Image (cartoon, rainbow, N blue to C red):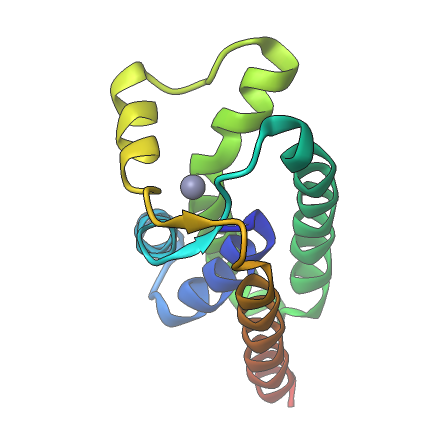
Amino acid sequence: MLVTNHVLTGALVGLACPGPVSAFVAGVASHVALDVVPHWGDRPIDEVMPIAVADGLAGLTAIAVVWRRTPARWRLRVLAGMAGASVPDLDKPGQVVLGASPFPRAVDDLHARIQTRESADRMPQEIVVGLGTAAVLAVVLRRLRA
Ligand SMILES: [Zn+2]
């Protein structure tokens, strides 16, 4: 699953949680749930890298925009939800930039094992999930600001 979709989902999860700790834990759980469902992937690394870089930048932008659009009262739990939902994917930039994942081998093995339902044909699904989640999040945040 694209990390941008994990970030957007994590924001919604954070809004549904009573505080930052539960938001972070639920964010990690949402990451696992989204990685288990069929999603885009299963491409050679040289094809994935340009998309991964663009997705990483989009995810960081989403964090900044959501942070800015979230009323102060909700910000910490929303940030915690986004962090929990995206932190499991730090294994990829860790491997590319530092040559190693920041997580224990058992965590990386589990993360790889749950992502067996990837297909190169599912990018349209990723885009629909991202746009739909962003739309729901925008409506919820607008109502919280009103
Ligand atoms: Zn993942």
